[in-house]
Image (cartoon, rainbow, N blue to C red):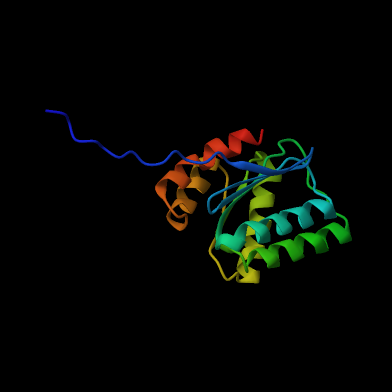
Length: 164
């Protein structure tokens, strides 16, 4: 007698790296978008992030893992860059289910950045949940319930690692 056949789940797709330069890398996977900011962004980076989020959201609203990974660097933005950042942030409200902002900076600069972003979130009153974290693990765990499946949530840290 032969054993009954078991069905295994289909293999997960590989994440798609949809933007990459020396300041920003973006990967898309199912309903998750991962952004890794490695230096102070220019207007083109904010525009690329919003354009990518809008394109990915054509399939449905996204969970966004938004990671500042620039240890030892102090963020500095021109007025044009700050305006582009504001447009990006406002645009994310229309395409996201939730946004986990992870600031991987130590000391006073990291604490200040987390405080400023937390304050902006409170003042802006986004249409989707937003929260600020100091570690990837915390951000991934918080974002997990908003994603389409546990498998997508489980891949978040691996996807971030592909952007290094």
